[in-house]
Length: 232
Length: 95
Image (tube, rainbow over all chains, first blue to last red; front, side, top):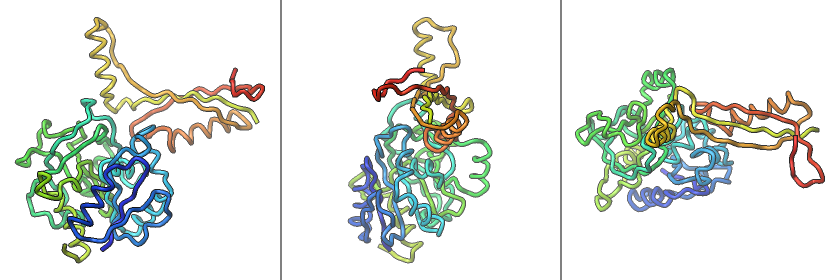
Protein backbone atom coordinates (compact mmCIF):
# COMPACT_ATOMS: atom_id res chain seq x y z
CA UNK A 1 0.00 0.00 0.00
CA UNK A 2 1.39 3.36 -1.03
CA UNK A 3 0.76 6.70 0.67
CA UNK A 4 1.01 10.19 -0.76
CA UNK A 5 1.50 13.32 1.35
CA UNK A 6 0.40 16.52 -0.37
CA UNK A 7 2.69 19.51 0.13
CA UNK A 8 1.01 22.89 -0.21
CA UNK A 9 2.90 26.16 0.24
CA UNK A 10 2.76 26.57 4.02
CA UNK A 11 2.20 22.91 4.94
CA UNK A 12 4.36 22.15 7.98
CA UNK A 13 3.27 18.71 9.17
CA UNK A 14 4.13 17.05 5.86
CA UNK A 15 7.40 15.75 7.29
CA UNK A 16 5.63 14.35 10.35
CA UNK A 17 3.12 12.49 8.19
CA UNK A 18 5.87 11.24 5.88
CA UNK A 19 7.93 10.06 8.90
CA UNK A 20 4.92 8.28 10.39
CA UNK A 21 4.36 6.26 7.23
CA UNK A 22 7.98 5.63 6.23
CA UNK A 23 9.79 5.24 9.53
CA UNK A 24 7.08 4.09 11.93
CA UNK A 25 4.89 1.99 9.62
CA UNK A 26 7.67 1.10 7.13
CA UNK A 27 5.40 1.67 4.16
CA UNK A 28 6.12 3.42 0.86
CA UNK A 29 5.25 7.10 0.76
CA UNK A 30 6.05 10.09 -1.39
CA UNK A 31 5.47 13.80 -1.36
CA UNK A 32 3.01 15.23 -3.88
CA UNK A 33 3.54 18.89 -4.76
CA UNK A 34 0.30 20.85 -4.93
CA UNK A 35 0.88 21.74 -8.58
CA UNK A 36 0.85 18.11 -9.64
CA UNK A 37 -2.13 16.80 -11.56
CA UNK A 38 -2.08 13.20 -10.35
CA UNK A 39 -1.63 11.39 -7.05
CA UNK A 40 1.03 9.14 -8.63
CA UNK A 41 -0.74 5.92 -7.77
CA UNK A 42 -1.24 6.64 -4.07
CA UNK A 43 -3.68 4.31 -2.33
CA UNK A 44 -4.16 6.72 0.53
CA UNK A 45 -3.55 10.44 0.28
CA UNK A 46 -2.83 12.62 3.31
CA UNK A 47 -3.49 16.36 3.43
CA UNK A 48 -1.17 17.42 6.26
CA UNK A 49 -1.37 20.15 8.87
CA UNK A 50 0.14 23.58 8.56
CA UNK A 51 -0.81 27.04 7.41
CA UNK A 52 -1.37 26.78 3.68
CA UNK A 53 -1.01 30.20 2.06
CA UNK A 54 -0.50 31.68 5.51
CA UNK A 55 -4.18 31.02 6.33
CA UNK A 56 -4.93 34.06 4.14
CA UNK A 57 -8.64 34.75 3.68
CA UNK A 58 -9.62 31.62 5.67
CA UNK A 59 -7.62 28.51 6.65
CA UNK A 60 -7.59 26.13 3.69
CA UNK A 61 -9.54 28.46 1.39
CA UNK A 62 -6.84 29.10 -1.19
CA UNK A 63 -5.29 25.61 -1.05
CA UNK A 64 -8.69 24.13 -1.88
CA UNK A 65 -8.20 25.49 -5.42
CA UNK A 66 -4.70 24.03 -5.89
CA UNK A 67 -4.33 22.00 -9.11
CA UNK A 68 -3.86 18.73 -7.21
CA UNK A 69 -7.28 19.11 -5.57
CA UNK A 70 -8.94 18.18 -8.86
CA UNK A 71 -7.17 14.82 -8.63
CA UNK A 72 -8.16 14.51 -4.95
CA UNK A 73 -11.82 15.10 -5.85
CA UNK A 74 -11.69 12.41 -8.55
CA UNK A 75 -9.83 10.00 -6.25
CA UNK A 76 -12.38 10.52 -3.47
CA UNK A 77 -15.24 9.99 -5.93
CA UNK A 78 -13.71 6.61 -6.86
CA UNK A 79 -13.65 5.63 -3.18
CA UNK A 80 -9.97 6.39 -2.58
CA UNK A 81 -8.87 6.95 1.01
CA UNK A 82 -8.31 10.60 1.88
CA UNK A 83 -7.11 11.72 5.32
CA UNK A 84 -7.06 15.44 6.13
CA UNK A 85 -5.31 16.41 9.35
CA UNK A 86 -5.77 19.83 10.97
CA UNK A 87 -5.17 22.32 8.13
CA UNK A 88 -5.76 19.36 5.79
CA UNK A 89 -9.21 18.99 7.37
CA UNK A 90 -9.81 22.70 6.74
CA UNK A 91 -8.83 22.22 3.08
CA UNK A 92 -11.29 19.30 2.75
CA UNK A 93 -14.11 21.45 4.17
CA UNK A 94 -13.29 24.45 2.00
CA UNK A 95 -13.15 22.22 -1.07
CA UNK A 96 -16.56 20.75 -0.31
CA UNK A 97 -15.33 17.19 0.18
CA UNK A 98 -16.66 17.35 3.74
CA UNK A 99 -19.61 19.38 5.09
CA UNK A 100 -19.44 22.26 7.59
CA UNK A 101 -16.68 24.68 8.52
CA UNK A 102 -13.90 25.20 11.05
CA UNK A 103 -13.43 28.67 12.46
CA UNK A 104 -11.80 30.58 15.29
CA UNK A 105 -11.45 28.71 18.59
CA UNK A 106 -14.14 29.93 20.97
CA UNK A 107 -11.57 31.29 23.46
CA UNK A 108 -9.53 32.90 20.65
CA UNK A 109 -6.37 31.07 21.79
CA UNK A 110 -4.12 28.85 19.76
CA UNK A 111 -4.38 25.53 21.59
CA UNK A 112 -1.46 23.12 21.63
CA UNK A 113 -2.38 20.29 23.97
CA UNK A 114 -3.12 16.62 24.39
CA UNK A 115 -6.73 15.71 23.75
CA UNK A 116 -8.65 12.49 24.22
CA UNK A 117 -10.98 11.18 21.55
CA UNK A 118 -13.88 8.81 21.58
CA UNK A 119 -14.36 6.75 18.44
CA UNK A 120 -17.96 7.41 17.41
CA UNK A 121 -17.86 5.38 14.20
CA UNK A 122 -15.69 2.25 14.49
CA UNK A 123 -16.71 0.86 11.10
CA UNK A 124 -14.53 2.93 8.79
CA UNK A 125 -11.29 2.06 6.99
CA UNK A 126 -9.69 4.57 9.38
CA UNK A 127 -11.17 3.18 12.60
CA UNK A 128 -12.18 -0.45 12.12
CA UNK A 129 -9.16 -1.84 13.98
CA UNK A 130 -9.24 0.49 16.97
CA UNK A 131 -10.02 -1.69 20.01
CA UNK A 132 -13.62 -1.26 21.11
CA UNK A 133 -14.03 1.45 23.73
CA UNK A 134 -10.47 2.70 23.27
CA UNK A 135 -10.03 6.40 24.08
CA UNK A 136 -7.32 7.84 21.83
CA UNK A 137 -4.75 10.24 23.29
CA UNK A 138 -3.75 12.48 20.39
CA UNK A 139 -2.53 16.11 20.41
CA UNK A 140 -4.09 19.17 18.81
CA UNK A 141 -2.31 22.34 17.72
CA UNK A 142 -4.58 24.91 16.11
CA UNK A 143 -6.28 28.29 16.34
CA UNK A 144 -9.20 27.53 14.03
CA UNK A 145 -10.61 24.18 15.05
CA UNK A 146 -14.08 25.17 16.14
CA UNK A 147 -16.37 22.95 14.05
CA UNK A 148 -19.67 24.43 12.93
CA UNK A 149 -22.50 23.33 10.66
CA UNK A 150 -26.17 24.17 10.38
CA UNK A 151 -28.77 22.01 12.21
CA UNK A 152 -29.81 20.17 9.02
CA UNK A 153 -26.21 19.18 8.27
CA UNK A 154 -25.72 18.05 11.87
CA UNK A 155 -28.80 15.87 11.58
CA UNK A 156 -27.41 14.33 8.38
CA UNK A 157 -24.02 13.73 10.00
CA UNK A 158 -25.68 11.88 12.86
CA UNK A 159 -28.00 9.89 10.64
CA UNK A 160 -25.12 8.68 8.45
CA UNK A 161 -22.69 8.09 11.33
CA UNK A 162 -20.37 10.74 9.90
CA UNK A 163 -19.21 12.00 13.28
CA UNK A 164 -16.05 9.93 13.70
CA UNK A 165 -14.25 11.42 16.73
CA UNK A 166 -15.39 13.52 19.68
CA UNK A 167 -13.30 15.26 22.33
CA UNK A 168 -13.81 13.50 25.65
CA UNK A 169 -12.15 13.18 29.06
CA UNK A 170 -9.35 10.58 29.49
CA UNK A 171 -12.08 8.32 30.86
CA UNK A 172 -14.12 8.74 27.71
CA UNK A 173 -16.86 11.06 28.98
CA UNK A 174 -18.23 14.12 27.24
CA UNK A 175 -17.30 17.23 29.23
CA UNK A 176 -17.06 20.80 27.94
CA UNK A 177 -13.64 21.08 29.63
CA UNK A 178 -12.33 18.32 27.36
CA UNK A 179 -13.36 20.28 24.26
CA UNK A 180 -10.31 22.38 23.31
CA UNK A 181 -11.95 24.76 20.85
CA UNK A 182 -15.72 25.00 21.36
CA UNK A 183 -16.59 22.62 18.52
CA UNK A 184 -20.26 21.88 18.02
CA UNK A 185 -21.11 18.63 19.85
CA UNK A 186 -17.40 18.26 20.69
CA UNK A 187 -16.75 17.15 17.11
CA UNK A 188 -13.05 16.41 16.48
CA UNK A 189 -13.39 14.55 13.17
CA UNK A 190 -15.98 13.74 10.53
CA UNK A 191 -16.14 11.69 7.35
CA UNK A 192 -18.12 11.89 4.14
CA UNK A 193 -21.27 9.81 3.70
CA UNK A 194 -19.35 7.05 1.92
CA UNK A 195 -16.75 6.88 4.69
CA UNK A 196 -13.60 7.13 2.54
CA UNK A 197 -12.76 10.76 3.32
CA UNK A 198 -11.83 11.60 6.92
CA UNK A 199 -10.99 15.01 8.34
CA UNK A 200 -9.77 15.48 11.90
CA UNK A 201 -8.22 18.32 13.89
CA UNK A 202 -6.02 16.18 16.19
CA UNK A 203 -2.68 14.98 14.81
CA UNK A 204 -2.39 11.16 14.74
CA UNK A 205 0.96 11.46 12.95
CA UNK A 206 2.34 13.21 16.03
CA UNK A 207 1.32 10.31 18.27
CA UNK A 208 3.10 7.38 16.68
CA UNK A 209 5.73 6.45 19.24
CA UNK A 210 5.92 6.14 23.03
CA UNK A 211 8.79 8.63 23.00
CA UNK A 212 6.33 11.27 21.84
CA UNK A 213 3.94 10.58 24.71
CA UNK A 214 1.41 8.41 22.90
CA UNK A 215 1.26 5.77 20.21
CA UNK A 216 -2.50 6.04 19.82
CA UNK A 217 -2.21 7.68 16.41
CA UNK A 218 -1.00 4.31 15.18
CA UNK A 219 -4.46 2.83 15.71
CA UNK A 220 -5.73 4.99 12.85
CA UNK A 221 -2.85 4.18 10.50
CA UNK A 222 -2.95 0.46 11.41
CA UNK A 223 -6.67 0.46 10.62
CA UNK A 224 -5.92 1.88 7.18
CA UNK A 225 -3.26 -0.79 6.54
CA UNK A 226 -5.47 -3.64 7.73
CA UNK A 227 -8.34 -2.33 5.65
CA UNK A 228 -5.94 -2.62 2.71
CA UNK A 229 -5.04 -6.14 3.76
CA UNK A 230 -1.58 -5.29 5.06
CA UNK A 231 0.14 -5.20 8.41
CA UNK A 232 3.24 -3.30 9.37
CA UNK B 1 -16.02 48.22 -20.63
CA UNK B 2 -16.58 50.08 -17.37
CA UNK B 3 -14.47 49.65 -14.28
CA UNK B 4 -16.34 48.99 -11.07
CA UNK B 5 -15.18 49.20 -7.52
CA UNK B 6 -16.68 46.63 -5.22
CA UNK B 7 -16.48 47.11 -1.47
CA UNK B 8 -17.34 43.87 0.26
CA UNK B 9 -18.11 43.36 3.93
CA UNK B 10 -17.99 39.86 5.37
CA UNK B 11 -19.36 38.93 8.79
CA UNK B 12 -20.21 35.71 10.54
CA UNK B 13 -23.82 34.64 10.05
CA UNK B 14 -26.16 35.61 12.86
CA UNK B 15 -26.42 31.91 13.77
CA UNK B 16 -22.65 31.64 14.26
CA UNK B 17 -21.15 32.78 17.55
CA UNK B 18 -18.48 35.41 16.90
CA UNK B 19 -15.84 34.86 19.59
CA UNK B 20 -13.93 38.02 18.66
CA UNK B 21 -17.12 40.08 18.86
CA UNK B 22 -17.86 38.66 22.32
CA UNK B 23 -14.33 39.46 23.54
CA UNK B 24 -14.45 43.02 22.17
CA UNK B 25 -17.90 43.57 23.68
CA UNK B 26 -16.55 42.54 27.09
CA UNK B 27 -13.58 44.87 26.67
CA UNK B 28 -15.88 47.75 25.75
CA UNK B 29 -17.93 46.95 28.85
CA UNK B 30 -14.78 47.08 30.96
CA UNK B 31 -14.10 50.56 29.57
CA UNK B 32 -17.51 51.68 30.74
CA UNK B 33 -19.39 51.23 27.46
CA UNK B 34 -21.86 48.85 29.05
CA UNK B 35 -24.71 50.03 26.83
CA UNK B 36 -23.06 48.33 23.81
CA UNK B 37 -24.30 45.00 22.54
CA UNK B 38 -24.16 42.69 19.50
CA UNK B 39 -20.57 43.49 18.54
CA UNK B 40 -19.59 41.63 15.37
CA UNK B 41 -16.11 41.56 13.86
CA UNK B 42 -15.86 41.15 10.13
CA UNK B 43 -13.64 41.63 7.13
CA UNK B 44 -13.50 44.34 4.51
CA UNK B 45 -12.32 43.66 0.99
CA UNK B 46 -12.25 45.87 -2.07
CA UNK B 47 -11.51 45.11 -5.67
CA UNK B 48 -11.75 46.62 -9.12
CA UNK B 49 -13.34 44.68 -11.90
CA UNK B 50 -14.19 45.35 -15.49
CA UNK B 51 -17.67 44.55 -16.75
CA UNK B 52 -20.00 45.79 -19.50
CA UNK B 53 -22.89 46.52 -17.17
CA UNK B 54 -23.73 46.87 -13.52
CA UNK B 55 -25.76 43.69 -13.76
CA UNK B 56 -22.75 41.72 -15.01
CA UNK B 57 -20.50 43.29 -12.40
CA UNK B 58 -22.96 42.29 -9.67
CA UNK B 59 -23.23 38.75 -10.88
CA UNK B 60 -19.42 38.45 -10.93
CA UNK B 61 -19.03 39.86 -7.44
CA UNK B 62 -21.66 37.49 -6.10
CA UNK B 63 -20.08 34.51 -7.80
CA UNK B 64 -16.65 35.40 -6.39
CA UNK B 65 -18.12 35.86 -2.92
CA UNK B 66 -19.78 32.47 -3.04
CA UNK B 67 -16.84 30.57 -4.52
CA UNK B 68 -13.88 32.05 -2.68
CA UNK B 69 -14.22 35.35 -0.87
CA UNK B 70 -16.62 34.03 1.78
CA UNK B 71 -17.48 30.66 3.26
CA UNK B 72 -21.28 30.45 2.90
CA UNK B 73 -21.42 27.89 5.73
CA UNK B 74 -20.46 30.49 8.34
CA UNK B 75 -20.35 33.89 6.67
CA UNK B 76 -22.70 36.47 5.16
CA UNK B 77 -21.64 39.27 2.87
CA UNK B 78 -22.84 42.65 1.67
CA UNK B 79 -21.26 44.79 -1.00
CA UNK B 80 -21.41 48.20 -2.60
CA UNK B 81 -20.62 48.69 -6.24
CA UNK B 82 -19.76 51.95 -7.96
CA UNK B 83 -18.39 52.82 -11.39
CA UNK B 84 -14.90 54.32 -11.36
CA UNK B 85 -12.90 56.19 -13.97
CA UNK B 86 -9.38 55.02 -14.58
CA UNK B 87 -7.46 58.13 -15.57
CA UNK B 88 -3.96 58.53 -16.94
CA UNK B 89 -3.22 54.91 -16.16
CA UNK B 90 -2.24 55.80 -12.62
CA UNK B 91 -4.51 53.26 -11.06
CA UNK B 92 -6.11 56.11 -9.08
CA UNK B 93 -9.81 55.69 -8.74
CA UNK B 94 -12.65 58.13 -8.35
CA UNK B 95 -16.38 57.84 -8.55
